[in-house]
Image (cartoon, rainbow, N blue to C red; front, side):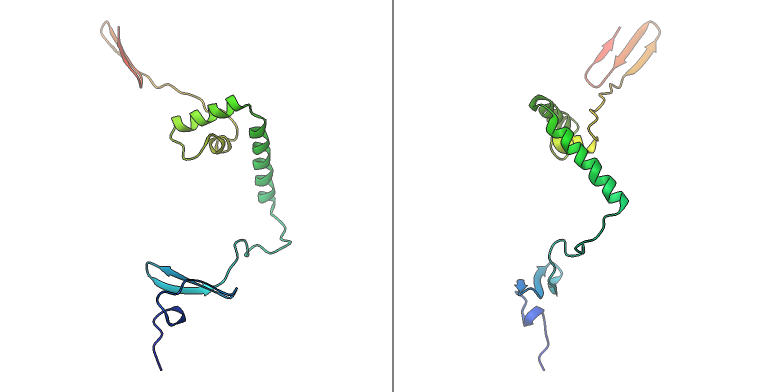
Length: 128
């Protein structure tokens, strides 16, 4: 009897075989596993938990708030997202901060040495 060295006696099998098996090439080698459809784990008619209902309501409310913003306000959210190097758009940053505009906090370093005052922030150093 021959030795099976990969799925379907092949090292190059990939794709679906009907709706029964899925063949895939991975760095560790060729694999085969049962066909699954995205979302198949959730049974039809499943009742969402209270936490899911709360989360869905909150996100729905935030989406409605976003849609009510003017184009100028939306572009301001894009600017804020870029300013903090947020991975995503202003919309994603809006959802992340639950619709509350970010607070710009300035950090200062104030040193007093004798009669001199050194004020340093992120942009400049002022000596008085």
